[in-house]
Length: 103
Image (cartoon, rainbow, N blue to C red; front, side, top):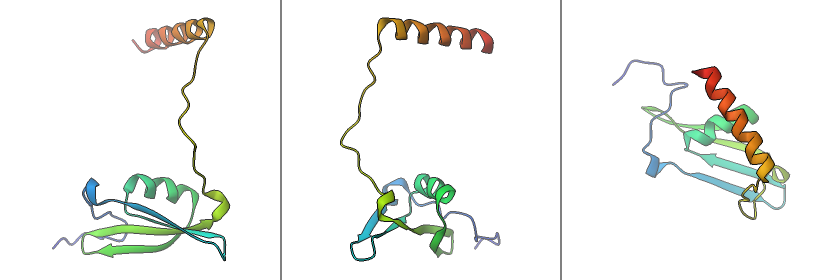
């Protein structure tokens, strides 16, 4: 057993065991977000306060957040940006300058 402090370290769950669940209470209009996915934990920590932290002997396994329902949204699809020839040429020139400066 490790002697390091596990108050802030993650348990290191495999990717196929990490999940995110959003439950919305219609009465209170609150959304509870449970996640063991470290990508979302990092993002949500920057935005919201942790309400509950789940741990095992290896460290943090999951975190729960509570937010207003109106902060949860769903996209209808991904849109692809269509550039005009002029926009494409301007982007190309900008990338050439950036690459020249970094060389």
